[in-house]
Image (cartoon, one colour):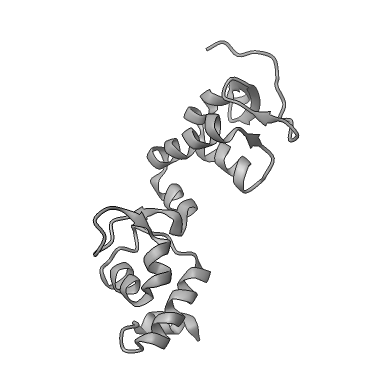
Length: 154
């Protein structure tokens, strides 16, 4: 793909997949269409959108395909970013559901599945969500909670 003139980031512009964007790389500035950047460095593009808030993109044309690419390109980053919005296979449901549903509606059951069922690798819980879960479990079923999790609450 031939490289073109520099196309610096415009924070006011909403980018589409065919729009060109120049980013600094190890080899120096590189200009590609945004759709190509999704394949080259999806995590960097996602961080520019979500964390740094310097890149605005079209939801349907750029963001949705980006999230799909993240799932394959960097599963750990994807799980961390999705958190409780991740669809999981959870006992008692015929199909996948958002992790948030059992987390909120059945905290003890979710705790058993997540911690005691060794599914910590399936759903990323931020420290805040861990504390909320451990507090609910400690209150609802104090014998269920592990000592290492009680330590976090102290």
